[in-house]
Length: 256
Image (cartoon, rainbow, N blue to C red; front, side, top):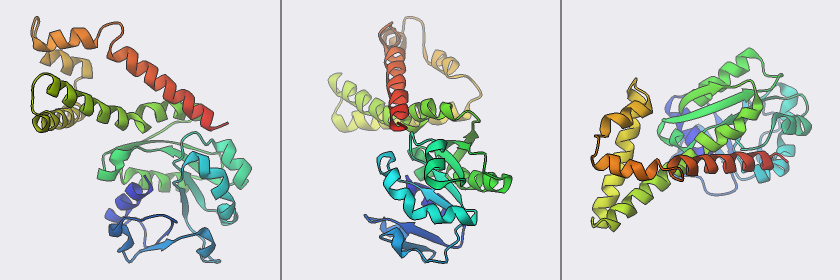
């Protein structure tokens, strides 16, 4: 996710210099950029560094171990931007003191500039810092803000984890095509193109998703036969509701 965000910022030339602390592998396309410096540990950050933003793009389970190395930047008015699921503003306040923190939940379509991010700002975030966060997050897709931080748990479940559900839909649709007699390559091509095209249509159409669905569905036709299965009491809506509630609960557990 951090690489996706950085790629978007580089594409829009949002900053002159990026210091990336990453002990693991960094994509060659990013490593080759002259404005990007890759550092294996935070100990190698310049002692006089005064970054406008520290982006915390690490797994939630690693956040407590990572933060102490960056606490010094809170004293110089740096904005902290976290994309870690479950880690609350109060968690960052305990670790960083009275730092300005924006907690955000982007999703992986940010890698192609088609993401959506929901963000929540701490009381210490000034208007210019919020505007800066908006520019950074907006470089990779849509941005929405919430005042109620508790909403970030279901946001994580719907849009943060949501791409995985869509990819699973592609997998399952392709496998169903094979089960119906299609060659695997053709079934995969059809599933990918159908989901991608339908999503693009939904994004561009002023009509609600239900209206778009109804436009495809002829009474007594093939689509109606499939929807009778998918819209049964134990069908897709029930499964997705259970899935989103499970992901929401897990996001809350990560805060504990």
